[in-house]
Image (tube, rainbow, N blue to C red; front, side, top):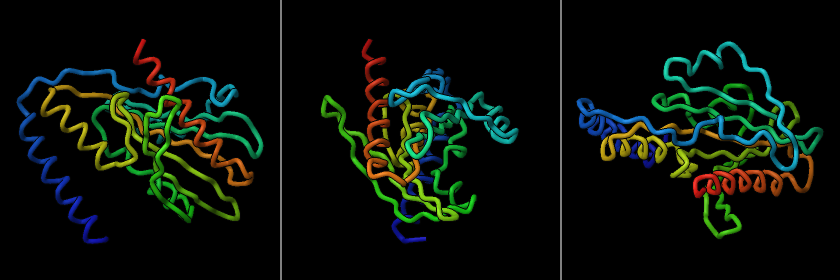
Length: 209
């Protein structure tokens, strides 16, 4: 593990411990935040099809009332897959997706942070990956949100949640959202970017109503 990564993890753990002590005896209010039931049933002009979950996936978030959604939009080489994990208290289940991809035999070919801007010039950072397995390649974008904060950083997601509890005495639902598509067409990157921006626009639009 790189020295900078170790330092960040140590700092995060120190902050987490301090904040946990600070909020232990506080009354914390529950806030809706961004739950996965807010995800659209239609995306990129395609109706969504809910995909079956394994028993493990269903039971994974049962203790804190969170849940998982897996959905496809469209078909063929232009299909979009959406996967989301919503949770209020169990931030561990929202670990970075590359952990699961690697465990399932995918190779991470590329990884970087991208900045997307919506029609109102609002900026959002997303994590970008290209993964491959058995000759199949996919492009993956993912991010975390509570409807107020939008970040591609797992560390910031955890830190925001702790700060909300320590300073504002509230526990907010967060969602990890990832969108992927086969890397078999020239517009794959543009389609995933557009799908993310559509989610951002809808979320901000609903919040302003």
